[in-house]
Image 1 (cartoon, rainbow, N blue to C red):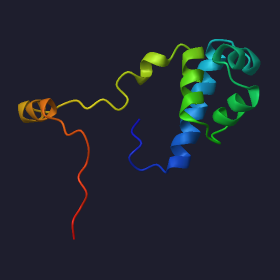
Image 2: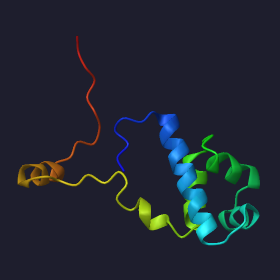
Image 3: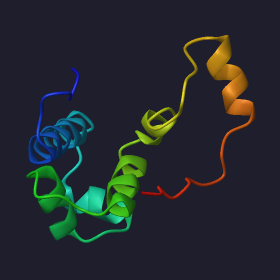
Length: 100
């Protein structure tokens, strides 16, 4: 599934549902997952219901569900061609300010 045409709220809802499905497949209660993840049960409930949560708590939840490796390539920049490979070697350290 691609998220190109979804709103942030819709993406949050879908990801929360996926995390809940994974928890149920592993036959874990929300309480057990909260203990494994080191977060409160209200955090689990909020994330699973699509109401959002901090990135830190989503990562903790992923660790508790054994999904942390799913993040390995999340924002990784994969070059599409040799030119992009070479450009990545000289990657900028910061963005420049625009001048008017």
